Structure formats: structure tokens, C-alpha cells
Image (cartoon, rainbow, N blue to C red; front, side, top):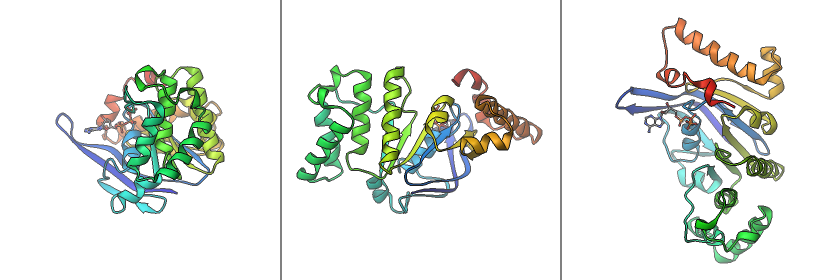
Length: 269
Ligand SMILES: Nc1ncnc2c1ncn2[C@@H]1O[C@H](COP(=O)(O)OP(=O)(O)OP(=O)(O)O)[C@@H](O)[C@H]1O
């Protein structure tokens, strides 16, 4: 469902000059699978997810979603993908129902199909209690559910969650992880970015550890543990990051992103 090959994204930055945010990464995600992108702030996760959802174009490499190329077939990609982040704008004066309905219309859905889909989603995500509550009066958990419903209204086979639990209390975050699991059961292809190790351990079928724009390693939790002979995932993760730092230092190729990530230990849970 998602195929990424040698994907690179460079930004022209006033301070850093030409900056490589994503550096030749490759991975695939199948139907019915949750793929976790784990990495500290600045690792390049959001950039990858924005390329997949056609908000950004890659500098080099190929990315396809449901068989469609993110550059050549961007409107087909948008039809097949839903994007959930932690900072989706929720309109204060629109109710939960109106907001999700509005996004359905933006996707060109006809009234009858839209009504059926709204009913299903409000049941599935248990949103009926607050269907008429305006955005300005919603709790963070309600807002997050509206964001998910909005991303799912057109029933895309691929869903992207970018740091979606950031700022949520434990209960709401736990509910969200439950929703993501149920989407996997429904056969969706899910990609989930986070800097929280326990989330990937609990949720993801396969994991890519990302740092300074590169995937340092990827596989199931068991494969990673076996390969690195380390049962403690936190130790494994930090071991990979410091090995990468060391290799960059020896090669004299310190990526500016490394400097930006010096406080990496403090950012990770
Ligand atoms: N528009 C931009 N112009 C220049 N640099 C950028 C731009 N967007 C992102 N970057 C840089 O690219 C790198 C990767 O950022 P990105 O947001 O993809 O990382 P991330 O892993 O999602 O981290 P975070 O969790 O902080 O969002 C960072 O060093 C960031 O400062």
C-alpha cells in the first residue's frame, strides 16, 4: 500500500544552507499493518509523512500510496489517504457533525453516501454524545476524535498519524491507540510517527528507527532485539543513535540535525 524508495528531501535554510531532512530512505507498509516511525524531534518523520500525503514534494526518490505516485498522481493519493496530526485546526463555531460533514463535501462525497458514512463513523468512534457540541466547547479528546473522523470520512485505505498522541492525557491517548488497533483489524494500512518508545512497542507491527533523516534500522520488535542482542528497547534505541553519531564523527560528516538533537535524551520518553 505504501512504498518508499530512496526518498530524499532537502530544504534551503537561511541559517543551515542546503539541509538534508530526509536522506535516501526506503520502506514499505502493507494492508492490515501498523508501521511505526520512531525518532527524536527533527529526525525527519513529519517530512516523510507530509510527502506521503502530498503536502511536500520529494527532492529525490519515489513514494507511492495505494499504487499512486505522490507527485504524478497527487489527487488520487489524496483520495486514498487520511492524515491525523496533533494540531489539526478545529473550528470553534462548527459542531462535530458539521466539521466532519464539511470535509466529506470537500472530498466530493454525495449527500446519501456522506450521511451513511457520518452515521457509521460517529458510532465507530463513539462521537454521538457530542455530535452537536461546537469546537470551542470541546475537550482535547473530543477534538482529537473529530480530527480522526475528518481524516477517515472518505474511507481511505491508508491512514497517517503524525505524533497524534502529543498533548493528550493518558486516557485519551490510550483510547486513540485503541482506535488505531481497530483500524488495523479493519484492514487499513497505518503509519504512525512518535518519539514515545512505549507506544511503538505496544502498537506497531514493524518499526523504523529514524535519526538525522536516515532509517538506522527497521523490522519487527523481535527482529530488532535479536539483531542487536538487546532486549531492552530503550537501550537498543539509544545504542543505535550513539553508534550513528560516532560513525558520523569518525567520517567527519556531522549532520546539522545531530547538533539540533543534542538534547535527544531529554526529548524521549
Ligand atoms: N520548511 C523547512 N525549512 C527548513 N528546514 C525544515 C523545514 N521543515 C523541517 N525542517 C527541518 O527538517 C528536519 C526534520 O524535521 P521534521 O519536522 O520532519 O522532523 P520530525 O522528526 O517530524 O520532528 P518533530 O517531531 O520535531 O516534528 C528538522 O531539522 C527541521 O528543522
